[in-house]
Length: 329
Ligand code: TRP
Image 1 (cartoon, rainbow, N blue to C red):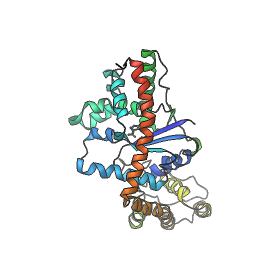
Image 2: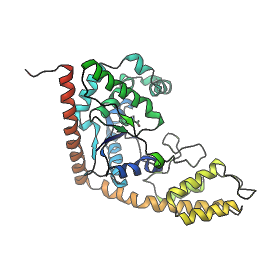
Image 3: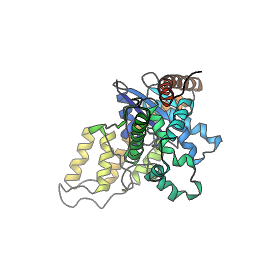
Image 4: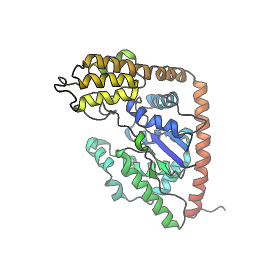
């Protein structure tokens, strides 16, 4: 079975973009691939989260991952800082990562521009830590968005460089994993493009009906179609795209017909969309609450994930240590 790996930094709640864009696919590939899903808490330290809040941020993602259907039995579901082998590989790989290369990374330059007061070297070597996450399990596939492609390229570069430098084949080069036709871009409700955390246009998995409905009813629309069968402007297409994710085919067809004969009322469409989003989210929200209340279960999940991840990581690290020339006395 091919290995798939994905990490997420614990910052806030998951939104529908995370859910339909990635998570639903993660849930599926658990049956066909050997999956590693982890919470990248070490990466989060680059922005100095408050120690009092940090644990809860990790718990939030863990509960939401579980509620969405990630399986601690099928996959390795773990917390990055529970696997010290990652940090040791990070040290080894840092010797092969050149300062200029790291400085030229788009994400680094972006962070420097946005937070010039916090240009720590953890930020500079962020791609090396990410490469360690991936290479420690010799993962073949990493599902990444556009913003992480360059980081994946650096992981490939470091894998190649390590193998060449030490004349070995310890690390395969990881590839981007493409969900193909299943890859969905989930739009926001503000007409600004995709749903995202930093865009502030998200509908969250952990959000109550009232708040969801309010957001949907406020979604940007236009003055309506004037000619039958006209193409939809982007803001309207976005509403239909969301509808295709959560509504019945007959409901979608109903509003398509209304659009096409110019009798559509956006208020009706939004009300239906809001109801269907709520119906999708409510059971997940209830599962999140139940899981979050079960500390014993969470403890078991984390321990199981840690054991699986460490077993895999230790095997790779032993090969890497051997390759660089560490020998037993
Ligand atoms: N950098 C990724 C992000 O911000 C998170 C991440 C850390 C990651 N390590 C990873 C993703 C390894 C994939 C593989 O989204």
